[in-house]
Length: 103
Image 1 (cartoon, helix red, strand yellow):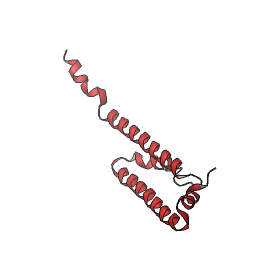
Image 2 (cartoon, rainbow, N blue to C red):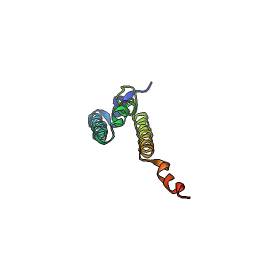
Image 3 (cartoon, rainbow, N blue to C red):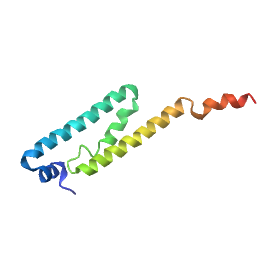
Image 4 (cartoon, rainbow, N blue to C red):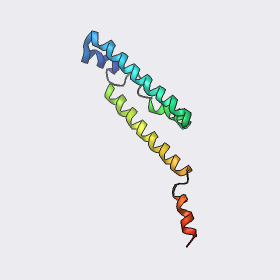
């Protein structure tokens, strides 16, 4: 168990810089969550992906590296799932099957 985001901010930036860092960190997390909310208007599956992506971001014991690693990998994983589902439901490789029927 690490010292958490608050302890890491205090250790790196001191008593004056820690609140500024934590405010910027909170704004970044809020911006990412609102981006997911806007994305869910086009892709409703994003609502289901939100808790999985931000699980470590909202826990008190995660440090910055762990949180950024988990959020980045979660976003890339969900982007791959969304792209794969879009490919599958838009026809995918079946769109070229019309050319095979002509021969």
